[in-house]
Length: 67
Image (cartoon, rainbow, N blue to C red; front, top):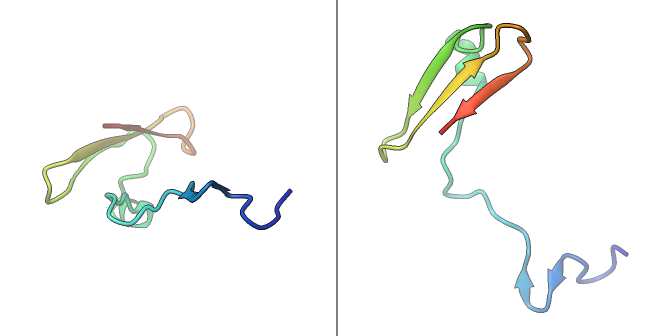
C-alpha cells in the first residue's frame, strides 16, 4: 500500500483539481458578520451562480449551505 502508482488506475489520474471552481471564502463571510447565529446570506458570483448560507441558531458551529 502507498507504493508507486497507488493513486492511479491505469493511466487515468484519480485526483480532482479544484482550479476553476467557484469559491466560498469563510474569512470574508466572517469579516462581514455573515457567520453570526441566525444569519442568512446569499453570495452571487459574476457567472450568475449563487449560493445561500444559513447559520443554525441552536449551534453556532453549524452552517447550512443551499445551492
